[in-house]
Amino acid sequence: MTDVAKTNLLGLTQPEMESFFESIGEKRFRAGQVMKWIHHFGVEDFDAMSNLGKALREKLSACAEIRGPEVVSQDISADGTRKWVVRVASGSCVETVYIPQGGRGTLCVSSQAGCALDCSFCSTGKQGFNSDLTAAEIIGQVWIANKSFGTVPAKIDRAITNVVMMGMGEPLLNFDNVVPAMQIMMDDLGYGISKRKVTLSTSGVVPMIDKLATVTDVSLALSLHAPNDELRNQLVPLNKKYPLDVLLASCRRYIEGLGEKRFLTVEYTLLKDVNDQPEHAAQMIALLKDFPCKINLIPFNPFPFSGYERPSNNAIRRFQDLLHKAGFNVTVRTTRGDDIDAACGQLVGQVQDRTRRSERYIAVRQLGSEAEEPRTANRN
Ligand code: SAH
Ligand code: SF4
Image 1: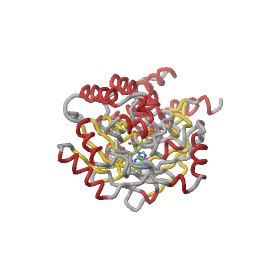
Image 2: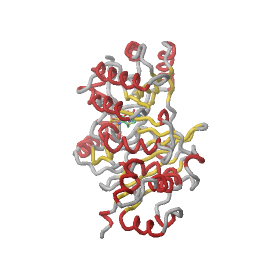
Image 3: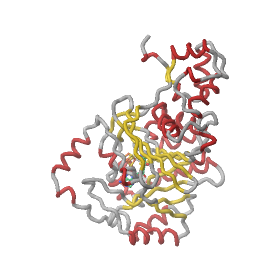
């Protein structure tokens, strides 16, 4: 029998693991034992699972495996941020970032190799799309990061307190793999992270936001980036399909379904002279009036030939103050780990693009300084 036929147990949720054990003629409670070995202790060798009998260990070795994505590199930044580049089955590489801050440790996880959505200021988007990650490749990033802090059980050590699906890719376009991976993050047999501390970030795939509400209650972040449709159509092309009124209505349904004290995180990447002007703040205040939300401003993280610039600190503060005075809870995301290219929008991995978009982008880059011109101000 070849390895290919083996079931990878890493990406199985508890019910799936129970079904697996049943299918091989074993008791369902074995699922819990094996999940603890995998996720709490980072074990990948069945022989190390000392509470399983020898016969069962041999049976598992023959028909199953615990296989995470291959770690290509691990970097640790001066500020404690860690970044992994991992290779997935399609051959592409994706990135995972760990950001310690105060008592929290946030892991930023990728869901796809590349992204099909082509937001104009995002380096992942510029690389085109290669593949969806499997559930094992998604939870595998948590597994790898957790193991890097030692073999203490995740629940005791708690190096990773929060997970955000804000790495490469659009998680709602890989729904069937992202949802089980998030279930394992929240399961006590997995990483025991509370539903409030697992956040899915989307650029606004409306039907999938509604579908998400039927299967989970994780926190939701919306990548807004523009307070009107005309500008958002330029920055987030998906807006042409799901415009702001439709999008915000679906986010409201989702948040209301979560119950009390839950809110939408609104992400807004600030682009100099494009969406950072006082009129944009005024439009945003009107748009989000009465919406249970917290606003997270992300100063643009530059990458070569993006055509955009980061606003000055004064412009960032001015934008924040305007929203703050209108009663919004507004934070500015500090840039972390930029010495290892781990900041938002700098995640590039190494995507084997199937859309040929990256070829077009490289062609634009070759035009040289012309392409370096910052975009003209858009005062919608
Ligand atoms: N596809 C999802 C999640 C991944 S992107 C989404 O778009 O929400 C995670 C966040 O980083 C998004 O809010 C995205 O807009 C932002 N981002 C992308 N490129 C950026 C850049 N160059 N600088 C700052 N933020 C960026
Ligand atoms: Fe894709 Fe998100 Fe980047 Fe847009 S911002 S291209 S949706 S990863």
